[in-house]
Image (cartoon, rainbow, N blue to C red; front, side, top):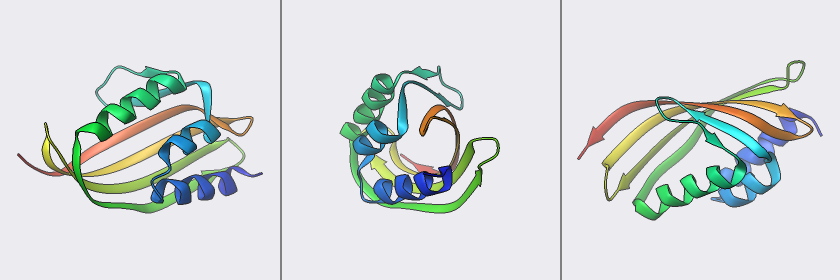
Length: 123
């Protein structure tokens, strides 16, 4: 399967809220996620734990939208731009733009850089 097809399927699953399944299917066991301004998460298990902790604090998801996708098959890189809006019990109401830059090997993401831009925050 091509990276483009994998990214399209991964995005469809994400929009359905199947983030745990996305992690299992598309992230290498030793994947590294670098989130702007934070210590990198090393390993699919650590990425899953961080996601679960975040979701536990969410009281409402207002929107989640994929804005743009770019795939460079030759260099095994994908980029996904998203926007999300949610309310969290600790952070209040947040609206963010996110860009994921994903590096692929053997059908799995082995490195991901996540750039987060606050659009609005009301606490």
